[in-house]
Image (tube, rainbow, N blue to C red):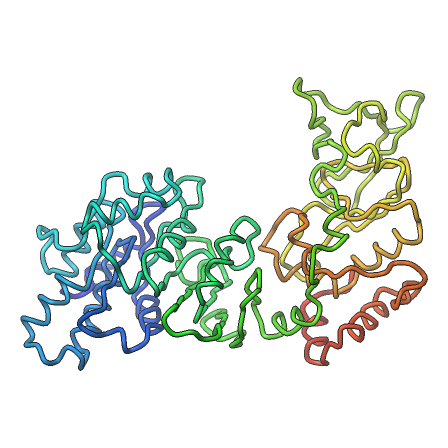
Length: 478
């Protein structure tokens, strides 16, 4: 049967792209591209394929076509070949009754034949509630207790309500088959929350990544950026990474990602990280206070207060309000001081009397990355609009850290493992190497930020290509 959805679009301009918020249909061209990533050797009469999130049947139909036309199955006549492929090689778990019906019609030319496309009641909810653990149970109930697969391929649901569930499908797939090919949201590439999933994927052996970082480029009704990945534990190989922007190849490299905690998104990201990657947790990461450093939320509410109390402030200092508190009304570049009472502060009291390097609590994957880099004197604190990155009894050291945070070098390294918008955390700064911020340093901190950048480029032996890449990616700190 021809592609039902393409046929409807051509006949009546009916463009069906989803069944529900969690059931987004994969465009046929992307399906073909993903199946192209599989080695030709898998299109033989013994390979078994599972789509754990069947919605349109396009993945199974595309694989059927490849198998049917494979010379490795040409010894069978057409009827035998069709029956063998459909009964013994292709399996799917449908995301809904609608998906099951239409996918059966696509694959078997009839919607009433169940075949190997199964819908389990409340499938998506069960996966969400069990954090993916029920997928194997559902497979055993649908097919056979000892059922194994050679390849898992598909486009799993990304969310169930507000819960991200696609990582559950990835981790389940890694346990089900030696080869896995999926298209998912792209935040697994750098996400702090998905660090464990990402490391399992890298350890398993990612052969290919095709990254679409522009939201809606692949799924035009969903405002997300996505990535295709292919994991092959049968044939060990380096990772071939490609990023595509506006249908054109933007970045490409082939490298060994063993030991990496994130996915570099360019050749320069990879080579620069190799040169500057810290060997252990840095002092900068260990000593920062990223979230509500003094227990004051962005709106002034005291985080420790169970009564919903707010910090008492005045616009001018008086006998009861002597502590300057740095505030922001959403623009970290234009903060201002109000005055509060030190007795109301319970969190990180040891930091109050220190010099502090702070910045906006939110970092962006743009050309600035870190906004609102400021210094606080002893006795000054800030609300949760800011994060304390560094503290010291020394004014000299703190000023030098502020300069370091303003360099393109540091902001580029932070940007590398940052999504479109994230909060400050030690993880986001984990690629930033420690420095000696004293006058004995190999860096002359008395120089301008631009000159400090040049010293850092030289210290880490960056090539001119790498320097140019940083300079073009990051704007001077304003």
